[in-house]
Length: 396
Ligand SMILES: Cc1cc2nc3c(=O)[nH]c(=O)nc-3n(C[C@H](O)[C@H](O)[C@H](O)COP(=O)(O)OP(=O)(O)OC[C@H]3O[C@@H](n4cnc5c(N)ncnc54)[C@H](O)[C@@H]3O)c2cc1C
Image 1 (tube, rainbow, N blue to C red):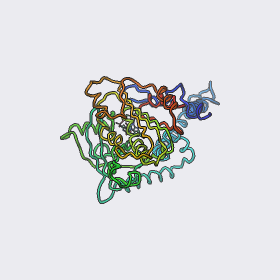
Image 2 (image 1 turned 180 degrees about the vertical axis):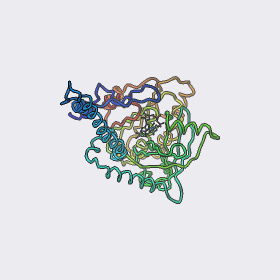
Image 3 (image 1 turned 90 degrees about the vertical axis):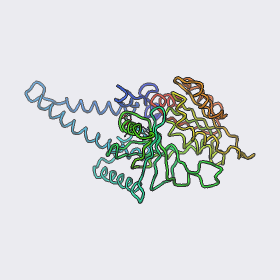
């Protein structure tokens, strides 16, 4: 109860994840949770107290003392700031997705030696993943609606699990910065027809990410790609990771995945694993529902092939003993559309895919799933702040 009402509760209603934006480029962050707000208020109160208490007001020294105190406080506040920034990647690694948990880590051991060791470990990881006889390369292709599809060819593959993300460096675009992206697909062993090992037990040499164009690194890369021949580009890249991917949905009888726009990247490998597992009888899932909110039917072009291959898993191979297949893909188109686009989004009339217009009601969708629930229910949300806030709010 303390977690629901205090630790993870949004400050006001359900808007914890919604970003404050001054413009498309200027993001002022998100609203803190109630627990985070308390910590912030305490820090603020401490700063005010340390700068104003026991000052010899009314004497000549008052201004000088205030100056010294505020100077010291500004310097002291820099230490946690730098440590938190440095520890963010470690927090990621430990799956502390809510960045504020990094505060806890930073104060647990605020030694610079430790921070140095962590940075060294990251460099070793980057070298291990990328330096070999072959180099990591990125084949980049431009898709509709400001999206880039990137195939990363890895010299040192690993076993990709759903929910993993990597940090991507493209030195020819930006030498020192890296950005996180979900691994949304792996090519190998897509089909059950191939009676081979599954992707979950086999390292894969090629992973895919879908990158939404924003205003910094992603914008520079998108401009470079659109200026290239055929709107495709092959560049040298560096991959750091993988991080995350420690949450399994295998034991849930009912699984609901909510995605908004490019948030679909986080769910595709979960969906593939669950559908494959359902057919093979290796996961508990009996009801699997993906709810994807998109602005335009064109978005399906991003993932048409991959969703098509998930829908076809196990088709034509049903055995009498295999459990009833209960996959639903509900696509909600919130922007303008034309009839051709809507027909296309149905992937040639696949019975698992239903397309509606307008925004979904999370409350109604979850209530429906709960009334038909089989076993425990697992819900995952990935999208913009509003979707995360609404989805998370109704789950609570
Ligand atoms: C775990 C995780 C997985 C993600 N997966 C995807 C994905 O699959 N596809 C996708 O399109 N986007 C994904 N993102 C978001 C993506 O990382 C940002 O859109 C990208 O870093 C923006 O780069 P930019 O320089 O163009 O950003 P800007 O235009 O400068 O800023 C746009 C937004 O991105 C945020 N941002 C900028 N740099 C970083 C950074 N290094 N780390 C985190 N956030 C940053 C900013 O705070 C701002 O909200 C993911 C983010 C996280 C945390």
